[in-house]
Length: 570
Ligand code: 6LW
Image 1 (tube, helix red, strand yellow):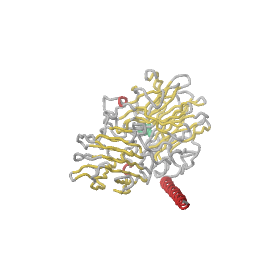
Image 2: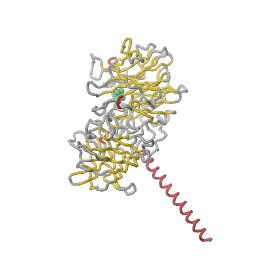
Image 3: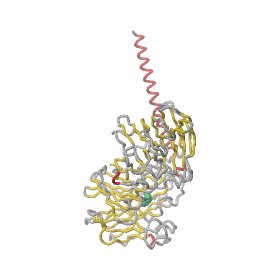
Image 4: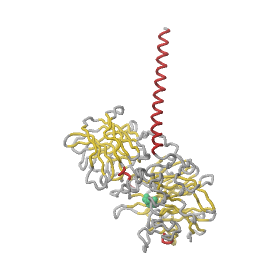
C-alpha cells in the first residue's frame, strides 16, 4: 500500500516536473521568437498599426478613437481601426464592405482607394476618399459616405464632382463645413505641381458651394527654399490637406515631396479660413528625407491631428521601415506621436527629424499586443475583418465554417497574375517575422489545378507555394514571379500524392522559408531562406504592402474542384 502511494506520488511528481519543463520550453520558444523579432528589427521603433496601412486619418468620438487607412485594390475597402488609448488598435470593420458600393473590377494594383479622411460630428461619422484607376464610365473620383456606427453600415458612397485627390472635411464653429483637396493646376509649372483648394460643402446634397479658393500653391515654395530648404523635389505633390481650428487660428497641414524618401509634413495658419496662410517658420516639422534610406524609419509624412479628452494633441502619420537598404516588405505603416504647441505652432515633442535614432518610446507609442504570435481566424463563422480579397468579389466562391475555423475555396479560372478577381483570401503581413500555416485538403482533378499559400505583393510580385497537377503528376512546388518574368519561375518541387498537406510559410526579414508535412508535427523544409526582397523593392506594389494568402485556381480552366483549408494560423 505504502509503496503504491509512493509510486503514485513519484508519478505525480514526474508529471509536474515534465509539465513545468514543457511550459518552460514553450515560454522559451516564444521568448526566442519574440527576442529574435526584437533583435532583428529595430527595438522600440514600432508603428501603432503595422503592415500595409498607409495614409492614416484619425478622429475622436467621446473616449473612442478611430483611424481609417487606404486599401487600394483590396476589398473590403478602407479598414476602420478602434482604440481607447491611442496605443492598442484593433480592426473593427470597413467603410466599403458592400460589393455594390465599391467597384474595383480590373483596376491595376496600387490604384483603387487612396487616402481617406474620417471625421465625427454631431453623432455622425463621415468619410471622404478618392477611388482611382477604374475604367471610364465606372464610378471614380471623390466620394462621401456616413455612418452612425463606424463598424457600419456605412451609406452608399455619394460621388462628388470635385477635382484632385486626398479630400478632407473641416467642421467650423459657426456650423459651416469645408472641403479641402489637392489638384493639378491647368497651367502647372512643373509635372508635380499641385495646389490645395478649399470650398464650402453642403453635406445634405454632397455638393460644393460658394467660391473655390486655392489656399496653398506649391509654386510659392518650389525652389525658393521656404518649406524645403531649396531642395528640388521638396514642394512636389502637395497633398493630404487637413484643417483644424485652435485659439482663433485655422491650421492647415499638408504633406509634400511624394510619399517615399522625400516625404515631408508642414503646417500653415491663418485667422481667416480662406487665407492667406502663413508658413510655419519651422517647416517641415516632420521629414526623414535627409536621413539615409537605410534609417530604421523613413518616408514620414501624411499626418492627421486629434485632440484627446484631456486637451493633449496627437498626430498619426505614415512611415516605412526598410531592411537592408531599400527593401520595404511591409509597405507604408501607421505611426503616432504626441504633438506639442509652441509659439502657436504644432511641434513634435522632440525634433524627430534630426533624431537619427527615434528610439524613445515616449515619442512613438508602442503597440501593447506586439507579442501576439498566433491568431485563429473565422471565430464567428464568417471571415474576420482582417481577411481581404483582391478586387471586388462578384460571386461567392468561398465557404467559411466557423466551428472548425476553416474555409473552402472553389477553384476558378482566374489567376493572381492578372487584374481579375481570383479565389484568393489574404491577410496583411504586419511584422518582419511572420508565419502563416494551414492544413489543406486538396486533390487536383485536372492538369494545372492548383491550391496552396501565397506571399503576394501584386500581380507581378509573389511567391506561390502550392499543390498542382502537372503532366508528370501531382507536385508540391514553390514558384515566384517578379516583374519582367514571362511566367512563374520554379524554385523547388517534389512529387506529392496525399490529399492532406500542412503548409507553412515563415518570414525572417525579407527571407522566406517554406515547410510542409502530413501533420504539423512532421514538418520538413521544401526551401529555406528564399530572398523575397523583390516583394518590397521600389517597383513592387508601390502603394501597398505584402500580404499572405490562401489561393485556389484552375489556371485558366473551369473546375468543379475546391480546396479546403483549416487550422489556419497567422
Ligand atoms: C495618397 C497620397 C499619399 O493619395 O499616397 O502619402 C497616396 N500620401 O496622399 C496613395 O496612398
